[in-house]
Image 1 (cartoon, rainbow, N blue to C red):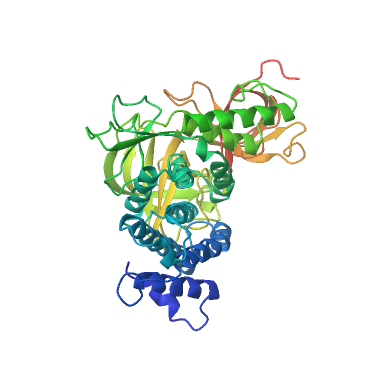
Image 2: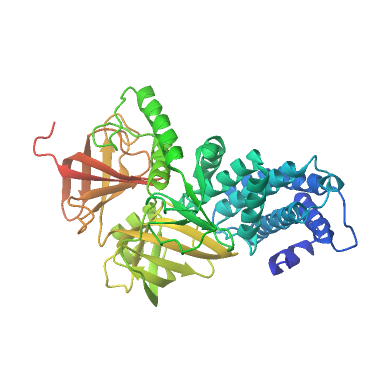
Amino acid sequence: MAESPELAEIVTEPALDPELAEVVRLRARVARFGTGESDAGDLAGIGRRLVELALPMRARVVRAQLPLPRNCYAQAREMVDAQTACAQHHMRIAQEMRSPYLYGFRGNPEVLDEGLALLADAFETCCVSGIIPPQGFWLAAHGLYLKARAEGAGNAIETYKRLLALSTIQPESFAASELIQVFGLVSALASAGDLVNGHGAIPGQGWFWVDVAQDAPPVAIVRRDPPPLDDLVYFSAASLARAVSERIQKLAGASGDPSDDGGSEREVVSSDEALLRRLRERWAMPPRRSQPRRRSEYSVQVCCGLDHVWERLVRGERASSPPLEWMVQNESPSGFAIMRIAGTGGSLSAGMAIALRREPAAPWSVCVVRWIRSEQPEQVELGLQLVAQAAIPVRVAFRNGPSSKSPVRALVLPPLEAVRRHQAVLAPAGTYAARRFMLMHEGERLYVAQGRLLSLDMQTEAIELFQFEVDPYPI
């Protein structure tokens, strides 16, 4: 793999980060394996050291948030490329029947397991960095798995399941801090995943298919039918979804309410429980694309973050943060994909609120970020879910909640055809604390009402969205 321009620029700086410098040296050593210059050596030790260095590097990436600064992006990219290249040599050792002992391994099962562990670790870095795995990544993973299956290397097969389980949750739709929790959960549960060879009938709609001859991740059957090939592999995370359900029930029991009804009757759903619910949905039944996307290219004004959207609606052009211009890449009735090349006006994360409009006279459409990618430093692409075509800025307060003493900024959203029958409130995460709440709108006249929550429809690390009605019998 060629050295990236971003890295080339950084490594010429006099004060190169010691850990990045070590990754660069380790990757250079990996590149020499099999070239005749060094046909043997401690490949096992290099792989283990890369895993050690990746952990603090990922922590720095999470703290930096997206879009990553140029140097942080280059570090993540270099680590992913180094681990992928190292894993590819693990695959060659196993497939070409080279002696694993010459490379520091205790046998072929260890070669396979540690090669797949490198790829799983690299994939975690891709997830928190918003980058796509490099060319050859998935071919290496599939090749190591096939060899592990042929040799009955159980630990390696479990590591492959871990990689598949993580890829099937659509990790780009989770905030980086959420992903850190997800990684631990996937490691604990992944062995429960079902992995079968593609001979016979095609499994049900909750399964994913993998073409092991292609450099591609698993594909949900509900999104695309598998090709008529005999060497496909099928993966199901339904058992993981059931294990997550058990954890949700334990959390609900610990809160004093054992019901598990999606939040329609319970007073509060914790952030941990909300995260588990989203994981369960992804694993139990992968989402299908219900509406076609139309390729587009036009500019829009974008306002990022609930606070900034609220201020823009209240103050208009007098708002302190001017909107930025983004480009729409494609759109559908339910959302958009937008891109900005440089300068996003702040940190971005999956699950945050964003408003956009095509021209200054148009109303602001309110969206929630479904996914975020950053294939180049300072370049960001967002997938947006439309939640309203207009909004009213309000303040809300829940009794006995964090907002009881100081009402928080929120948006009232009108009903959305085919999605939501009632008005909804979009508020910061952690606002919802009871069935009833006070709602205040300062317009030409002060409007105060008591709202009654009907359903909690969305809960992310940044926001929560719940349908409500004005209570006809306020208390």
